[in-house]
Length: 156
Image 1: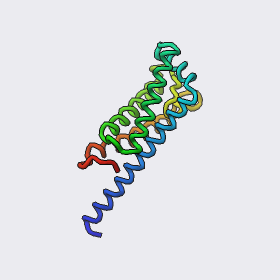
Image 2: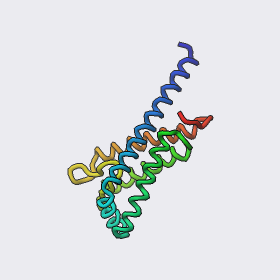
Image 3: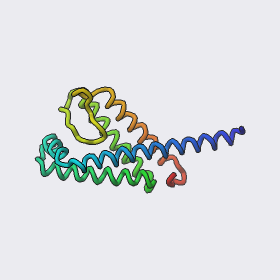
Image 4: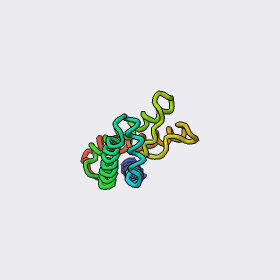
């Protein structure tokens, strides 16, 4: 195979990997939004207590996060606005990783936020949650990097 052929083949493989990352992230966000939407009262109680805004304030926060998760998931699937969506996904999953690390280190009490799966395994934040969250950050970083380097900035 010629060097140009290897470059084209590698680029197509990279684009397929980015598409797979976008799909996995979209599924995670849509499942997270659906799980919060199916039991908004539980999440509202937890969030209201954690942020000291009461149950009604927690309910508003939960509804906002459900909407953000659905919209971001749908935009990842469709490929619309790849730069802001890629950077938003990276920011969201990085924030979640940061919260899980801070909770893992014991600086904040554990809040069951009903986000992207349980933070705790066996009653405490553990390595499986950290690895899962790190993989989500790596995948969203891949999507964000692709959106910043793709010259045509088009959907895959």
